[in-house]
Length: 275
Image (cartoon, rainbow, N blue to C red):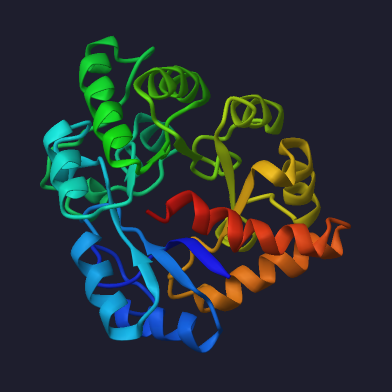
């Protein structure tokens, strides 16, 4: 098993465990590795330290939020040069986050000015920076993740990314509240070469979501283009390995093939991110 999306402390909000204990839990559970994600910090150095301590494949990256100045090629260059494997487009500071009234760094520190980032077609002025970022990701053969961008932005981004030579593209939990993408739309984008992520966090915390809803979403996209991750690490979520196993069990109970689901949480995500 390989978890493509886990949160740990240190962070700007409380987390259930730190990097060391999170990766130790994966080791005990027989996982081969994970990707550490933070909305407001590069996790590249943290991942390298955790991998050395536990002899697992632990990868990091950067999310292009307020701490990077948004869609900033220099932040991406620094991340990739240091060995980062995933670049997330804006997440907690995406314009979709504001519209949905979901948390951001400005929600933690109200003395900070609010920022909401977007890319084309909503922000045509960002096109040059996004294309530069895509070229860097292609050169590093790293993963471009769509973050919390909406469906129109994801469609534009996939076209730009493929034109720049990006091979590894992840639709970040497209069925989650942000971006709230319909399964049919996610399936169409996955057909262009992306993988669609479904998370245990959705099962545990997304309003109105059930196992049956997630199973139907996965079935519409096609399990060959789905990756399952925990997106866990919250104090009120199960330990990340348990959360990912719960997601698999729930989807299998809805009639999806357990063997294919295990591949969605092991071989597929690991191949997506591994150098």
